[in-house]
Image (cartoon, rainbow, N blue to C red; front, side):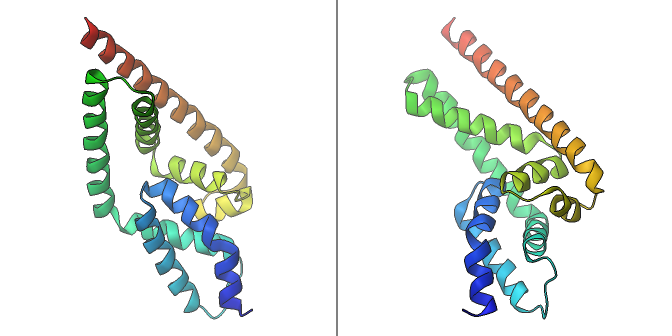
Amino acid sequence: MSDTERLFTTYHAALVRYLTRRLGDRDWAEDIAQETFVRALRQEHLVNERSWLFAVASNLVRDAGRKAIRHRRHLELLAAEQREAHVEAPDTALERAQDAADARHALDTLAERDRQALLLREEGLDYPELAEILGIAVGSVGTTLSRARRRLAESHEAQTAARAQRGHHAAS
């Protein structure tokens, strides 16, 4: 197996999973992952393959800001349609979709570094790798993750309460 095949086989699934969570769009995640591996092929030597791949993928996502804005607008429209449909016809699947939209929205409300830290940690990257990708000291990773988790929980709880309040008003 060539180095290229080994690199792809070893990291592709985790990279696409991270990017899908980060972007909310599997096709877009595949495109970014493909570009990341193309860039890896151009490198003569990678010191820390996993950190390098995730850092490059993260930078590509950041560079695609215009697409992210369009994507978020699309998600907001879908969430609004789901809320309207929920009022008309309550359904367990619809509630799950709304919960997922609330979770995605809560994730989107986080600062870029907090969101990136949580998603990379979810992919199993360790503290030194996170520090390298995020550009922070290893000793700051735990604080960053703790703060990000707290903010995510607070945002999700606020959205859940707001949705419940909207549902209460709609029922009145």
